[in-house]
Image (cartoon, rainbow, N blue to C red; front, side, top):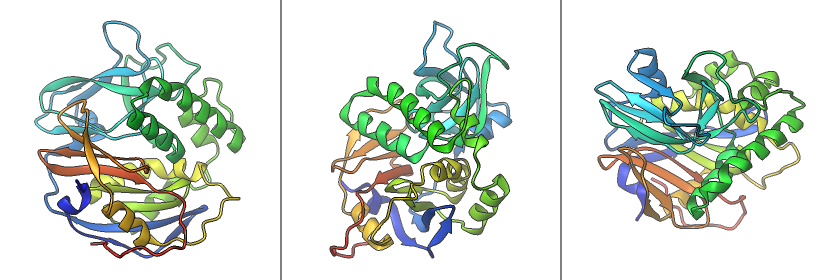
Length: 307
C-alpha cells in the first residue's frame, strides 16, 4: 500500500536552498483533503484548551497526560519538544487527540539531569525539536518494536551533540544545548521559512537524507521553525553526498509500501515496509503528517514516478 500517491495530487521540489551546511528542497504539494479541524498543541495551549502534565498516578519518564478541551483535533508532532514539569520531554511519535478528551501519550526525556518541578506543574510549548539523527534512531526502534531502547539512545545522542557543539548543560538539556550554539538566528530561520512556503522539505546534510511532509503549509511552517536548529546541529562537515537529486529521492518515497501500525490516539498510523524508516499518520483517511528516511544517494538511475 502506498500512502503518498493516494493522498496527494502533486508533489514537486522547489529550487535548492542552502542553509548553514544543509541542502534543502522545499516540497510543494497538493493534498487531496487538507483537514482544517486539526490544530497544534501550541495553538490550543495558548487558547487555554490544551494542557500537558505529569501523570497523577506516579512517576513516568516515557509517558505524560494531555487534556484537549477544545472542539478541534489536537496534533502533537513526532520529536516536538515541550518544557517544564519535572523534566523537558519530546513527543515520541505523532499523536492526534480527539476533541473534548484526555490521552496518555508516549514521550522521551531530553533533560536527563532533572527530576523536579522548577516552574510549574504543567508543560509549556517549546521552540525546539529532536535532531534528525535522534528521530532516525527512534524510528528504527519503533519499527522493530524495541521501544525500551529509545530513551537511553536519546540520552546518548544528546550527550554526543553536547560534545560535538562544545556546549554545556548541567542537566543535559537538549533545548539549552541547541540554544547555546546557534549557527543561525531565530530571525534568520523565520525569514527562511516564510520565504519558502511549502508542504514539506527534502533535507540533505543532517545524517541520512529524509523527507518531511504535511497536509498543510501552516503545519509545515510550525514544525520546521522548531526543527531547523536541530537539523543544523547534526550537520557533518566531513560528509559528502555525490549528488542531491530531489526527483530520485521523491521516487523512492513514491515507490515505497506501507503497513498499518499501532496508534495512540485518534490517528491512523502506517510504517514503511522497506529498509528505509518512515511513519505517516492519517485522520479519518486523510493524510496529516509523515516522514521518510532514505539511504545515502548514489548515481544509479531509477524510473521517474514523481507526481
